[in-house]
Image (spheres, rainbow, N blue to C red):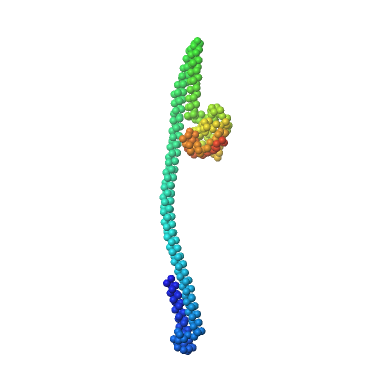
Length: 340
């Protein structure tokens, strides 16, 4: 505002200076009388109009220039104020973003550490699961041997003793012979139960004849016990992967058939095994009631959920991929791909 007033005063001074120059020109050039008369009170009318117009012109110019300059100054002040506020907001926003970035980096570091800890925990858990399954197989083998060597021999000896007693009895003791025959029948049932239990714990067919024969025997026992039609189509795949892995594949089949017998309510089961790019593919499919796979796995406390987790863990021990597909009312399909 001070600069605008200065311009207005300067324009008035210039107008008065023009008045003075015009008076001087009239005096020195045209010799029209006294200089002071020409300057102040003796100004001719036409000169007065011209000088007044020039004075007003300079004054108007000064007013316009003063207003324009004042407006520009106000605009510059407003722009400077806006720029200062913007810089302040930018600094505040930068500080906020910097704090947010610091917090985000801290959270990312913490999350990465937690993910690493989780991976390590999963790795240890899988290692522990593998050890547990291995220990379970060793314990099964030990129990199977004890059943076969101890209880099996004792029950067989009991059966022979009962037969010897039966042969020594005379004809008139028919009622005692009947009781002995009933005892022999019970002994036979015990022997058969022990044989089946020992076979389930450690299948001798697997060790003696290989995986394919063991699966065939398992499927035959399953079909007879559960009264389910089974379609079996198995290629010779024993030599496609390590023999120590045969037991793991057998256990996966055993668990799958056990789940079908307990939960599926199926009337037909299809089992296939074939070669694939140097590896092996195994499929077990039933027409049972099906289930929600994720829901069952989430309910980990249930026997069925544990069975599925055990199958997954055994597949991981093989380095194989196991896929279980099922929907309520649409049966279940299990696909196992074992690398060479």
